[in-house]
Length: 331
Image (cartoon, rainbow, N blue to C red; front, side, top):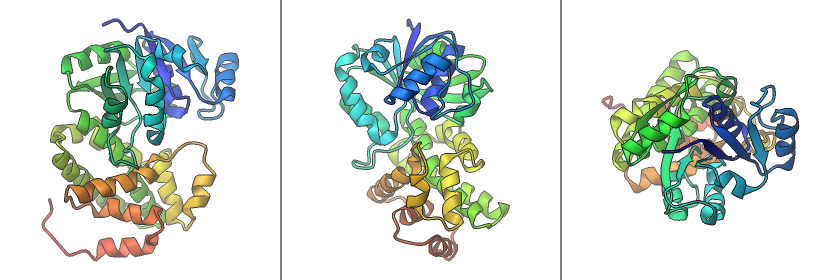
């Protein structure tokens, strides 16, 4: 499979970091961004001051506001916020070739439909070869060339291996899998659980409570994964447990930092108003609750996050409710 050029759709922090990773892998990179000032800054000064300040970008990265220019590359990485994936994918439909590899890098679940990103991709771009990328990776680390390992999933595992070998590098290690549902689900749920972990920290409940929250959150991830057909070994890997550990363990995570602010008593509208980047867990929480109810899966932590971000319950109320749940055998 020839992948000499890679188009990155989305000029946020993660899209910019992936552009850098593809340049490290020796690929010619075209980065599409919606914001004219982001395009201009990257091309003129090799920086994305808006979304990823402090990182000097590879000289070979070309930024553009022309979607067709990025879509013309050998492979495309779709890195727009999850709630905008359908619209952007629809706009790209006439620009993409039959069988062209399109890698979903957005982590979330569509709020309006409750559908996974892979399902949205299949509906809007049925003629491409879909893949999913997820795993523990902060944008700033990847952009600076620090070591990271992620999972690339494709229904055809042989194709996934080929693409992983061409997009990966010594700095950006890619494992492959055929479990697209498991890889997607891990990346989406960890955002919701990171909000919960941040709330625990913001409330000053201690390291023991934090560890318990993350562990029981992982149990919820496994339960929903089983109901949706994900493989347990996938959720035990980089895109599930690995990303959960990272995102719940550092305030670099937008979702954890939002949860921390909520735990300290700030209003969610005020926190979100002060951010340029999207905090995916806020929108995914609603979709996760719907999926859990539709599949009769018990997910009390995710439901509690949903109640908080939608304003139905206070932080103190949901913590009390979780701690007073009936005792049960550990699953």
